[in-house]
Length: 64
Image (tube, rainbow, N blue to C red; front, top):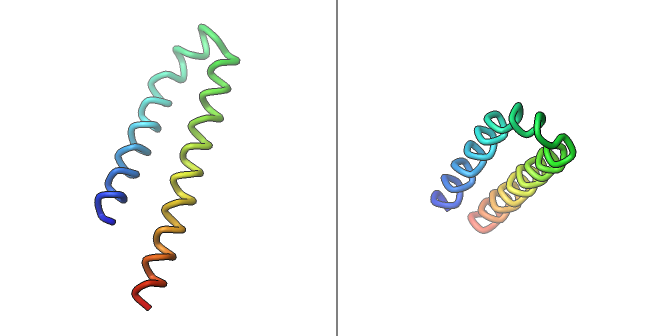
């Protein structure tokens, strides 16, 4: 469980850092691709958060 949590945190920090780095570069070359990647990153963050909440709920449910 701790490994999953650490992996999600590393992935989220990597995505956010990459998004910050690529924001100006991508906007200059291809704005539509930049918008697509922005939405894709948001979707990945939402899915990771959603699965993390489900995982915490199941963990608490099994301990109770």
